[in-house]
Every structure is written in structure tokens, then in C-alpha cells.
Amino acid sequence: MKKTIKRLYKSELFTEFFDNEKSSGLVLIGCTIISLLLANSIFSDQYLHTWHMKVGSQSLEYWINDGLMTIFFLLIGLELEREIYLGELSNIKEALLPIFAALGGMLVPAGLYLLLNYGTLAQSGAGIPMATDIAFALGVLSLLGNRVPLSLKVFLTALAVIDDLGAILVIAVFYTKTILWMNLAIALGILLFLFILNRMKIKNLIPYLVGGVIMWYFMLNSGIHATITGVLIAFVIPFGDGTKKSVSYKLQHFLHKPVAFIILPLFALANTAIVLGSDIVSTLSLHYSMGIMLGLIVGKPLGIAIFSFLAVSIGLCKLPGDLNWKTIISVGFLGGIGFTMSIFVTLLAFDDHHIINNAKFIILLSSLTAGCIGFILLKYNLKKSNEITN
Image (cartoon, rainbow, N blue to C red):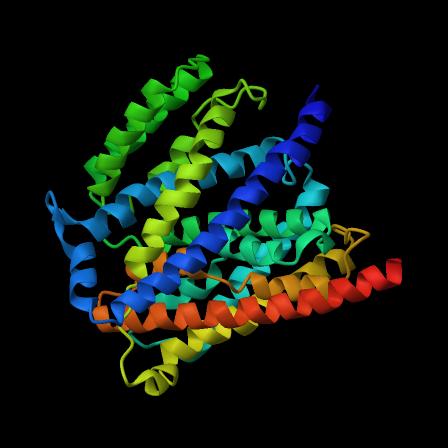
């Protein structure tokens, strides 16, 4: 039964996930272009004001970043849970390659960033080049069409999911400033209660969602970033046997399109409203700018390739038969598309609006550069591979 479910996961559900993510990536590209054009047009003031206008006690941008993005993290948690139970992470031998690749893709970029910024006020931005944007990366990969082997799609997807988990842990550990222990205790108490409901096999989704909203409120007021709630709630929602009838599957399936085509586009529009000044050249020479560029464009592919090579060399895992080191290096550049998570970490790392604005611009530029390099290399290497095969 479990093998049958795994086959289902690797075909139908994975295809659905990949198709949604690649479509979302193309939508995000469009939203980013529109946002940049509006922010630098005659409508700039009105457009920027839209995201800063008050909705209740906070700005619209705040509710998107701290509220709606929690749902995005809930989806990431559900996808990670499914990977662990039924997907590429369920078999430790198969999981080790993307795990090592993701580890290298986080440590090397952060190390390169710190090399330029350690001891400065900008050193808190070390987490910025660690992340991979799943939607953008798969969106670029999808442009290559049917020539992309399934194993490469799975490798990039698993790498990006693990990468997101790493980014979540970094946010929880390094970007929490002041903790209000009582609120945190209440939030964790609610999580424990929901875990008990899970163990009691309560499959009604309503108590988990209501409990999640209440937990989000107390987490928000604890000092720990509230979006972490989404991931934690994902792991107490009943997974069952993982079939289409399971609560986890139904929720994951329901969330895919709203997240891909509403929440992430809103995040892109709100957070890429960047006014480009006349000092772009000087911005590129700033240490934190060079750290982000070096981390995403060089550190990502370098870390992914080196750690993957080490893992295979010492016999911990093996390279899929239809892949080679050229394709691993090439797809490593797609790992340098940081965007959503990189911008998210930027908002937590810096308080200065000018630095945040500059960092966002550098993230966009670096992600675009890494994506173009990865696309060109993959197009060439996959073509050569297909010619050799034929």
C-alpha cells in the first residue's frame, strides 16, 4: 500500500505541484515587472501609498508579510511533511543528495556574505543569500520544456523545500530579538493541544485552523516571527495515509492555487515596489550588496555542487543515472534565485528603509543574473546530453 501511495505521489501529486509552482514563477516575474514599472512611474506616490495605507492598526504590507505569508509557510510545511513521509525525503539514501546540496547552498553563500560584512552593521544580512525561491526556480526550469529529466525536477524541488526549511530555522533562531515568554508559552500550549487532537485521530480540520489562528496571534506577540506558526501547524494536521482522502492532502491541494496565484503575487507586488535612484552604480559597490550578489550568484552553485560531490564521493548517496555534474552545477545557479525568501529575510535583518530598498534591488538583480546563467547552461548541457543519448 505504501509503495502504491509513493508512486502516486511521485507522479500525480508531484506533477500538480511542479505545474503550479512553474506557473506561479511566471506570474511572479510579471508581478515584479509591473511593480517596478509602477514604482518608477508618474503613479509612484499613489502606488507606494497603497501598500502603506492602514488596515486596522497596521499597513496593508504588514498584513501581507506577517499574515498571508503564514499561509504560504503552512503550505511549505505540508509539502515538507509529505516529502518526509512519502516523497524524496522518505528514503534516506535518496534524500541525502538534495539534503547535502541544500546544506552547501546555505552555508557557502552565508560564509561569502560574512566574509565581506562580518563585524559591520550589515552582518545580520547573512541569511539573505541562503534561500531559494521554489516558484521562480521551477518557473525558469519549466521554460526548458520536456528536455528536463524528471530526476532533475525532483532534485531541484527537494533542494528548494529543504532550503526553505533551513531559512525558516534561520528566521526562528537568528531573527528573533526579544521574546515574551508568556505569549510564547501560550502559543506552544495551543500547539501541544492540537498535537493531542492529532494523536486522538480527530480529523475535522476546523479545530486545527481555529487553533492555528489563535496560536498565530500569540506567536505574533511573543517576538518570534508569526509566520513560523504556519510550519508548526502543518505538522499537527492529520496526515493519515497520505491519500486524497487525508486531511493533509485536501488542505495542501486546496492551498496550492490561492498561494501560487494570490498570496505570492501580492507579496511580490508589495515588496518589489522599489524606487530606483540615480546612484545604482554606487549601490552595487556596497559591502552588503556585494555579499548578496556573491552569495546568490557564486555561493549557491558552488555550495550545491561541492557538497553534492562530497556526498557522492564518500558513498553516502549516488547521482541519478540521467544527471551529470554539469547539470548539477547548472541547476545550482537556479538555486541562486532567492527572491521571496531572500526579500522576506531582508525585512527581518534590517531596520533602515534605505538599506532594505537597496537589498531588494540587489536580490532582484542577483536572482535575475543567476536565473539567466542557469537557464543558458541547462539549455546547452541538456541539449548535449540528449544528443549523446540519441
